[in-house]
Length: 400
Image (cartoon, rainbow, N blue to C red; front, side, top):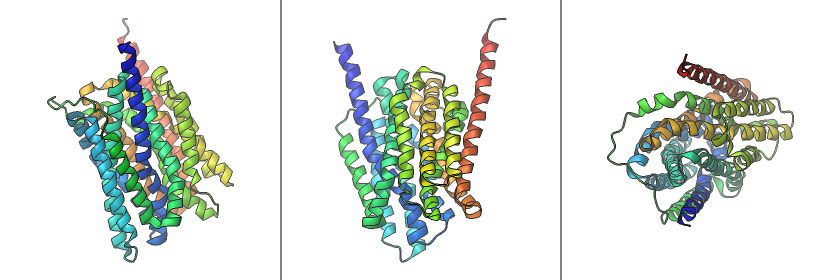
C-alpha cells in the first residue's frame, strides 16, 4: 500500500507545483504584448527598441542560467524557485515605476529595462527550480512528462496572459498591468512556502558550466531555432495586426497557447515513448507551416491559424530534447545542465526581439514570420544531422 501512496503523493505535488507555476508565470505572459505597445506608443520609440525591451528578460536569463543551475543543485530547487518568484515581484514593480515616468521617455525606458533584467533573473531561477523539483518528485524516467507539464503551465500562462495584459493596459494603464503581475507572483510565493523541497547537493565537486553545455549544445540548438517562431509571435503579432488594421491582436498568443497546451495535455507522453529527434523533426515541420501562414496571411483567421499551428509544432520540442539532456548528465548536475539547456531557448527569445525589430523596420512585420519559418527549417536540418551522427555511432559500436 505504501508503495502506491508515495507515487500518488508525488504526482499530486507535481500537479500542484504546475498550477502554482501557471498563475505565477502570468507575470511574464501579461507583459509580452504590453511592453512593445508601451514602448512604441507611450514612449514613442521604434520597433528595435520595443524588441530590445521584450528581449531584455531573455538576455538576463542567458547571463544567469549558470548561476540558477548551480544555486538549484547546491541549495535545493525550492529555494531557487522562491528566490526566482521574489525577483518576479521586484522586476514587475520596477517595470510599473516605468509607467509612472512616461513624461521623460528615456528615463522611463531605462527603468523599464532594469525591471525586465530583474525579471529575467527570476525567470532563470523559477524555470530551473521548478523543472528540477518536478523531476526529483517523479524520477528521471518521467522527465519528459515533467517538462511537458511545466511547458503547458508556462505557455498556458502566456496564452491567457496576452489578452489579460491588453485588457489591463486598456483599463488600468501600463503600471496597473505590471502591478497585477507583481501581485500574482507574490501569491505564488505564499503558495509554495508550505511545500516540501527536493534534496540539495551542497558538497559535490562540479565541472564548469561551459563543460556541461558542450555536452548538450546540439540539443539546445534545436530548441533555440524552435523558439524563434514563438518569440516572433510574442513580440510582433500584436504590432503586425495593428499595422494591418485588424482587431483582437491579443488572441494571437491565445491561439498559440491553445495549440501548445492541447498537444502537451494529450500527447505529452510522446517524448518518453518515441525517438526524440524524429519527434522534433515532425514538430518543426508543423511550426514552419504555421509561421508561413502568418507571413502570407490575408485575414485575421489565417494569422490565428498560423499562430495555432506554431503552438502545435513548438509544443513537444523542448521536452523531447530536455529528456535527452536529463539522461546525458548525472543527477547532481541536473540543475546546471537544465540551466544550460534552457539558455538556448533564452538566446532565441532574447535575440529575436531586436533583430526582428530591425527586420520589421526594413521589410515589414510579415518578414519576421518568414524568418521564423526559415529558423524552423534550419532546426530540421540540425535534427537530421544528429540522427545521422547517432546512426553512425551505433554502427561503430556494433561488432564486426
